[in-house]
Image 1 (cartoon, rainbow, N blue to C red):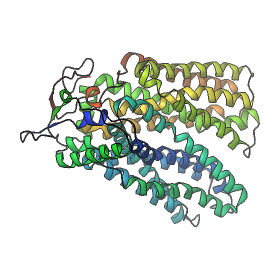
Image 2: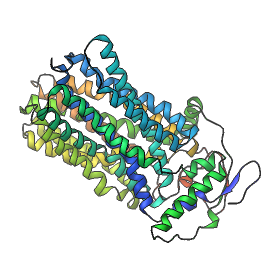
Image 3: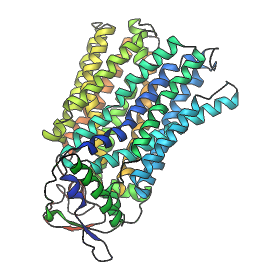
Image 4: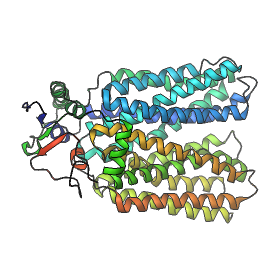
Length: 499
């Protein structure tokens, strides 16, 4: 890499990353970073599974309202963590933050198990620890989506990102099986505590693996750390070669001149997103809000539907959850590659619209009384086979269509927006379910969810960016990028800020 004038550097680092063949380095990186979604699925599932247990006199003897507030506190922590750590990730680097956010999660979730009583002080302690755990996971979303996208070669980026986001449901399965065993085979006062320690034990192992991952060379070069970026990319290339893979030559025409950008706060970010990238901002918000609303509406109330309308006992609901989770997990892993081959626009629009239409059909069958607990669960599995891949593509979209300098903060903003709107889902659907005496209300609710997903798909059909196979710098030119020989701007772009 040749040094450029003081105003910036000439670099081939993005081209060197994108030309790499898949290797053990990429597999190790994906496993080490992708565990964030497993931990989130695990945390939410464990909290849901032990909710009833915490009302028992044998445990904390909390009221149902106090226990229900735990989920709200955790989600609020995710929003705050995403915004706070997302800003730090753009400022301090991806590696620093994905180490810090995992440590924050370990502390928060680990201390949750040490809640020893139900007095006012202990209840506050419990809420604080759940908030801290949520902050850690929220920060993980911003830092890790950025790191994965910046380290994965362009031709693999879509399928990898979608598969990683889909592993949330592996965490849900792990949490369901773990808590089922702990709550049924052990003393309740011990079982619920061990349930909250499953995640930290897994996290400690992953923390050791993450220690050996390099910083994102893309982030380093964009922040004036040319020597460090060269060292990081060289480390990656050497590891790929040691695995027996041959490195193809680098296309010199893909060199680009970059000037380190000034730090951009959230106010400036909002101006960049909604003034300079209005169509992409609308796209990101639409995808994230629609999938979050649907998921929170169905996932947080599925046990109520099974119990109120189909008479399924609470002891049997874990079996149905595992089936539901498997359907969500299979989708991203089986059709994720199509987002790189058929393309982002077709697949994002298709998965959103198909899942919405299937939900509408299921709503009609539900209202007609044609479903039972098993067929209802099968219907959910089919719907979320597509919806899960689409939801993962929402995270992929907001992490690749904005400039590198603001990537983590952009993810954080859209994640926060999605969580705020998604929080309405359980409230609305819980009221619609009620005592189970008025199925027409839930029928209308299902149609609402279907309409939201179809709307998100239609927005994608018009506004989605054809990012498949393209370098991140071609999808969204960095704010500090100058000329680059042999490159074209993203479709429709006339400046680094164009939509």
